[in-house]
Length: 335
DNA sequence: AACGCGACCTGCGAGC
DNA sequence: TGCTCGCAGGTCGCGT
Image (tube, rainbow, N blue to C red; front, top):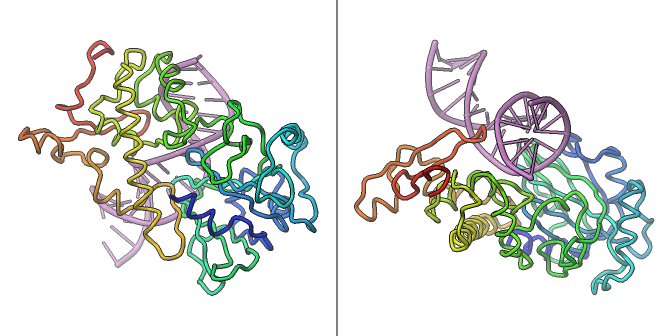
């Protein structure tokens, strides 16, 4: 929903100019702000791809544009090997993408498509001026209150499994190098439950810890984890090596439901395109059953006429919210 | 391999 | 009223 919306606005358009309003948001681009701009200006956005909380835009050269420069040699070489043999991108005027503009939205980041007359947002960090297109605003803005997120340019490398790198309309078996260590998220069509379950069972850890490990499954943060566990009626400390297949399916299905509900609420709330990986505050306000509900009745138990109060515990320097009745703590690390 | 923890950053609410 | 303080979140990197 989020990514699809963005792609329809920006894919195929040239980045004509880049304003870095706050260089702190370019922190992870090691070659600096000037190199960041140099890589983007003149490039064409080929697509918008998402994996977990990373969202990137593969870039191709405009036919008359200067080649991108300043990309580290190792990533350039890696992407070079990927080019041969990969299928040609249908809408790609300049060959296979070698680099991508990466955005991580962190906690509070947003990508906004805005017209030139829209006033700057208070926390505007980066402004991309796009080539004009009829009926569409001309700016893509990165807005971030807390600077947990950021933008940078990274190389494109082949995916390990040969499947598309992430969720996209025009998938290529390439992935932005900085996201290559991130597992597919449960909404990705190429997500493999079998692979996930196999790796989960081999872990000797607790279920929530595993859900938060982005190298095992991505897109699930503290809030989604608590909500998914509540829906699946599983405790956060449940040992992963005792988890039955049906239980793992249940918690993943629950995570999908939570993610979809949050994305649906977040992707449609503004006229201008509004992207916020955290999901809509509206969704959080209305639909949370466990997270942040300490001291309130468990909705499921209440519906069954049972009195039970959501409990909050310290966990991983964060918090874990559970219903003591319908998410009982496992005994002996087992059930 | 698993895991804990500090750092990063800023708005907000609690407490004084 | 105005101040300080602690907390919240995702990710990374380091130490164990």
